Length: 326
Ligand code: SF4
Image (cartoon, rainbow, N blue to C red; front, side, top):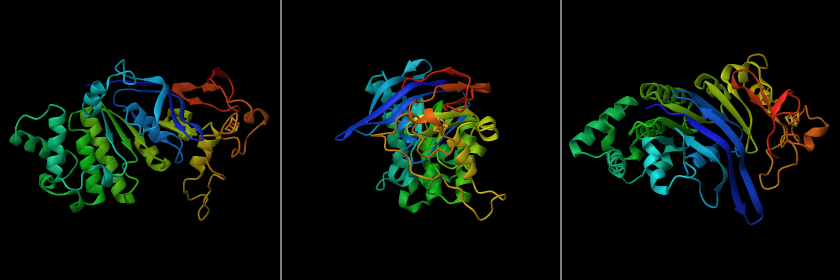
């Protein structure tokens, strides 16, 4: 089944001794059936927290402080724990960051699949489960014999493929992948992403891919969301965001990609991301932004809405048609 996922004004906060850290601040987007969305930004920008909140997998003391996550109109934020448990894997599934840590090191791969099928009422018989697991492994280009191995007997790329196979075991309509290739070398990264795209197409599922590799994202995604300090600062079709980036942060992220035109020089983004406990007033990027103007340190910009759903929050991008709450 194909599904539409709508994230509306999502807010996530972490109450800490020194105050409240707002890790996700008023994030909204819609994921259409079959769409591939890339969420990019520096570490701590709120990408992973956004997807963990969508799946209701936030580590304590993190909590959803507002907003909705609508999967085919049903709000996952308001769903019971049991509804959510059943929804994971069967309607929305996660390919976690670091396959090393997400697989149980003392159980054979096949047993881990069988446990998953049993937990979701999809177990019929041992023989049928073995055949199902063999098909899943084949779908991610692994031999059926991998089911008899322990995680330590697999390479990083094989473990990541096992995680993708687990994520599609119950044919979810939304797959969320949290930096699934970050620990892999470049060649294996591409192979794993190709596998993810292929299984996504076979299932007609949509995908959210979290990462910070803009080059990889440009090849993978239909839509790009750029996050900074818990905000979605630019969002739109990949050709718009890469072809005509409007937010200074997006421009700098793209300029920092290696290219033949500035061979030998790396263009970084000066400064560090702000503390989410005590972010600067106004636009949180103003302390690092080479284009900042007077109002930037005072007011958070409204949101500019361009063609094809292109959205940007920056005072320099005018014709604002919507205004975010402060
Ligand atoms: Fe830079 Fe101001 Fe735009 Fe923020 S609002 S990105 S500080 S120009």
